[in-house]
Image (cartoon, rainbow over all chains, first blue to last red; front, side, top):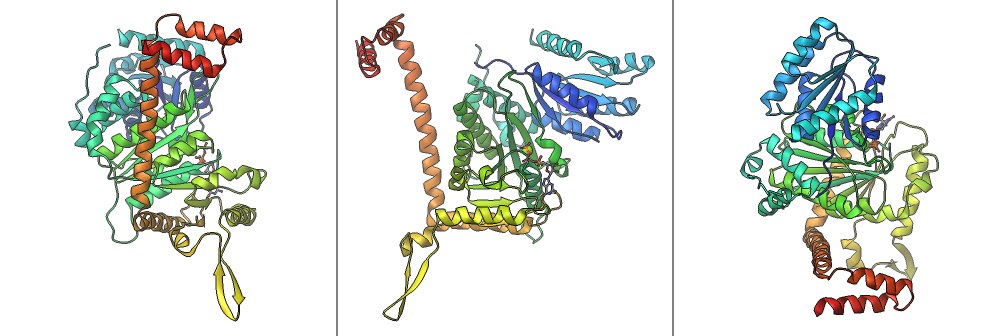
Length: 135
Length: 342
Ligand SMILES: Nc1nc2c(ncn2[C@@H]2O[C@H](COP(=O)(O)OP(=O)(O)OP(=O)(O)O)[C@@H](O)[C@H]2O)c(=O)[nH]1
Ligand SMILES: [Mg+2]
């Protein structure tokens, strides 16, 4: 049987207008051998959850710089749960104030990364989360 | 390996998570995926399959978005069709990873529960891609989607194989791809049922269209009419009857970013469908497609059975004999096949 490919949805929810960071992550994950579904700018929570469902991804990576993470992320998690995708791991990159981190973790976010985080760290964390889920 | 088999009823009932998960198994070519396909197969054969192929960046995804949108929102009073899309992008040969970006251009379809979009990386072998695509299309078909759009890049063997899946294949060109003629590989005309010149808002569209028209003319010389003893006679490459049955790919200009030319494009698609039905070509294509799939499966099954039946070292021994030039490849095959019969 073919090896297990990690499928990742990289999405940019919210209204902030540039996706350089998201693209960098998308390419880094590709170079790490993952299949990245990239959906572009200005995704609504509904669009993110719909894409995650149709693409049967293992991981959703959200890039949020607008500061709207507390409005967007719980909504996305809620929609994914309603779709039966509570097993999908969610990672967030962006500017997240310290006080929001535990709230997001409680809501079910697996990893949270600031603008300076190395892509290698994110790759390692995704792999670790995948092998933990497989066991 | 536990072959936990998949209940296909939710897929038939339109459960999108169940469909999405079976697509993953089909793509992996897992035992569960094959088992599901066995059960889904009796429910297939209803959908209309449309292939969209062409060089990178010609606007295939934007066009798929428009085509799907038009089928969802018909301008006449026809029923909206349920649409499923599979968009294939290349896997990086170096890392095995891929960035699948076709959904970026399909925003207009989001939020519509009667549209399903799946991105797929080309992964390993050519045969594997064609098999996975065929499987995904079967699952969509069984799930009750009326129209299935298959987007692939380029014009290689994989595209030709995938085009063979489709009832109608659109080949997309666009002006300004450097040298227009080079981008239009001769082989692609053979799979094109409809030629689309997209980005018709861009300069150079006339040149692209002219180049295509010239190439088409070479492929299907037009009827030449001349006078013979005062009577008009028609002479052509094909005889009259054959000519009736001949479909000459129309060329349609489009602007996929604003929908221009889409009504006409859908009209061509429906005319091609009509042509396939009227000439019996639809049934012929269907049968040829099933035959190709059967042949491929027979070959891979026989080869893997045969390999498994060989005693250890026999194959390597034959290889040694080849290397030493004691046997020719033909002789080696004879020896190996004899070996198995013992
Ligand atoms: N001017 C113009 N631009 C277009 C048109 N159609 C598509 N584009 C643009 O062309 C670029 C590529 O479009 P896509 O639809 O992604 O093309 P594609 O053929 O699917 O690309 P790949 O899947 O990467 O091979 C995008 O920036 C589109 O907005 C058109 O009719 N006119
Ligand atoms: Mg595309």
